[in-house]
Picture 1 (cartoon, rainbow, N blue to C red):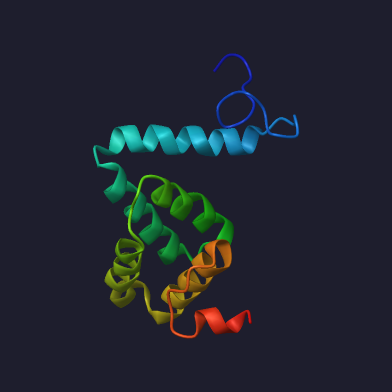
Picture 2 (cartoon, helix red, strand yellow):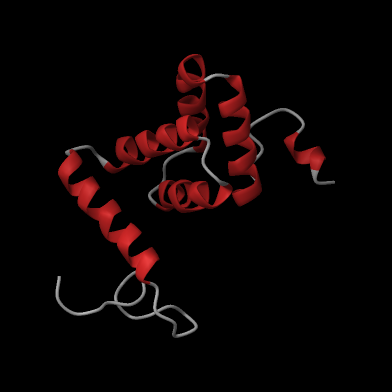
Length: 118
């Protein structure tokens, strides 16, 4: 690769700092999407399922669930994805994922989620 890009769109972070790690992650995601042959909804739901399997951090959900919300993926499909992977990854991973999504977005996917922060 030649040249250096900054920011997700090559225009630098809001505070003017270079963001090479974020830039790399964005480019990897775009490349993978293009190569996957999947539609946007399926691609993002698959990524969310993989994050559940890995026990990902709330920040990972922020990026992926945020992108899904931006393109109009309904919360019901995200919830359905958690249900679909539960038998494979186990309840602990699904609860951790639901709490991570809740922490990142304030979306209660489990009963009592809204009351926890009150």
